[in-house]
Length: 339
Ligand SMILES: NC(=O)c1ccc[n+]([C@@H]2O[C@H](COP(=O)([O-])OP(=O)(O)OC[C@H]3O[C@@H](n4cnc5c(N)ncnc54)[C@H](OP(=O)(O)O)[C@@H]3O)[C@@H](O)[C@H]2O)c1
Image (cartoon, rainbow, N blue to C red; front, side, top):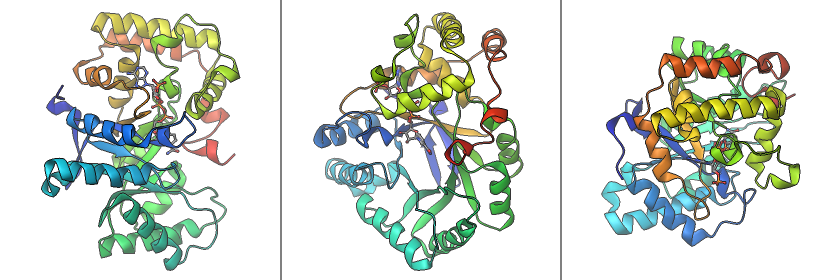
């Protein structure tokens, strides 16, 4: 399998990514037990299929170590000169409190060492509490570390538009914001996407497949009980679905998506990913990968052959128009982590 050129996106002047990123929260342990050797081995299959970009975080269990192991395996097989083909985007999610240079640099050094790199391709910063404005202090130190060469590019995750504006006005060189974005959570469209376009920033989307709920597997199925939702991801997005509407409306959405998927000879998941990839300011969609446990590489590759037309979008809108307004209910991007 090889992906078409449309699968690639010039994320920054010096980094081209696969528009479907491989999400590594799924190796954290909260989505089933992962076998390290099998998982790292399978990372090679993702790369060879064209899925060269990884999304991870300091707190996703062994994810950063997996990148280190994967890079060693990759270098042994293909030579160190080809390591530049891999893009690994990590996050720093600190506990609130004072953000001294020493605290910030220590955290970055740990990620560098675990991932076995001299420079982080992308460091995405998360902050839990806006009433504590030391996030600006942390970002100032991160910007210095970028100047000094430990970080290639700085980014954010789960920041709202108001704080993104403050950060940009503060002169911090941000390239992207990672936010929840799916057919049922279109909050980024309200304010975030417009701001990003104005300031030449991009969005990386997560939660697009609702942890797997957005698939044939749940079409025509009775509403799953909590105990049946066996990953942290399924539980998270079932809550989001309940805020958005209910299981009956979700079944209507799945039925419409299946009609569209049948027309294009692809899967429901493909339509969900394509929809978000086509939204303004979206650079890529992160699809969670339970490495060594479950694999959807061939199916996800089909996203790049789909072109949604006006009829498809109209059918989708006819269902989505009947959902609740998550901006009113939850707030802007990332507010679900703070309310
Ligand atoms: N910044 C943040 O706060 C934040 C929060 C959450 C996630 N993320 C990032 O986003 C990534 C994605 O995670 P997510 O929780 O949002 O999950 P997701 O991508 O919505 O769902 C992942 C699950 O979807 C299923 N799937 C994948 N491809 C499929 C296909 N073609 N057909 C049918 N099912 C398919 C798989 O389920 P099975 O494994 O059961 O087959 C997979 O485990 C994470 O790994 C992480 O990198 C970031």
